[in-house]
Length: 358
Ligand SMILES: NC(=O)N[C@@H](CC(=O)O)C(=O)O
Ligand SMILES: [Zn+2]
Ligand SMILES: [Zn+2]
Image 1 (cartoon, rainbow, N blue to C red):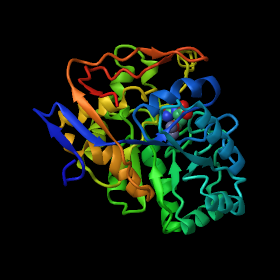
Image 2: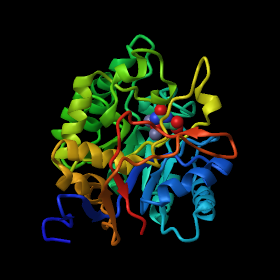
Image 3: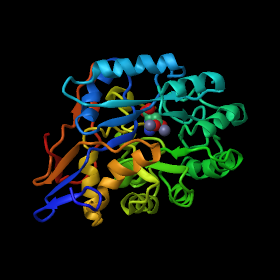
Image 4: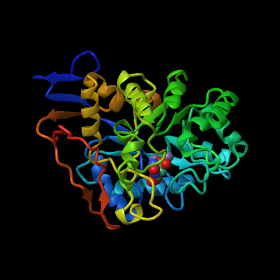
């Protein structure tokens, strides 16, 4: 480790040691799927913000405690992995309950899904006025609100739904409730990048690996690729470039949230297939490739391991991981789960960086 923030290089930049990363947006699911996907995350990441969009969703403290225990039970014995739990905000969430759960230290954040915006969001919020007292309490406590930032209005084009959400919903809420700490999850647009860049220290954004490498052509041109379909859907190339620029700057408001969202292939390969890309397995290889391509390997650690803990007011991880560069790494095309195979996201380019076994 050197004094410039822990990144050290050897040789012609063929190894890179960084603080152990965290994943600030992850879907672990439950049951057989949880058991199959958890090792893919625990191998590389020390902590993850675990999304609460189970069926039924994680809405009470008791739900969160039970889910945490199921995750810990499914964690490989040798792994040191800490799940950071979240609650699913509904119009019925009570201020009193939320305060109690937050005081217990059981949850790290609360997740806001506009009803109907994405996978398992039916119990989400329709009328934002109804959750205002809860958001005010969160601002007082300093508990972050994580938002799936898309409007659900059928008249709004799917490629515009994130930008419209900022104008119609998020910005008014933030003006109305000063001090509310917000993470815009899985941002996909230049508008979101600009909004977060100028938003001050109470606003941050997670960025996925897949949104750094695909644009909407990858999904739709030359045939439809269901494994690239996730929400928010990837936008045009200029937006992808804005995301890359945000990720590589080292700006404190941007950090990694993989949004690794496993669905069995039989649920994705349908006339109406599920949204979500499964990236837990190869995210770090993809990121190293992108950051190297941009001449920004020295800022990878800020994105994966430093900016997130700083926003969440948590210590950075003690341990490190070492990435090494060599022949292209071959990842399995899919992982096997009790619910059937789950295809691993294919970045469509050779990946030369692998995480060295600890
Ligand atoms: N990103 C997705 O496309 N899907 C996520 C839900 C979400 O994060 O919006 C899922 O749970 O499958
Ligand atoms: Zn989402
Ligand atoms: Zn997600």
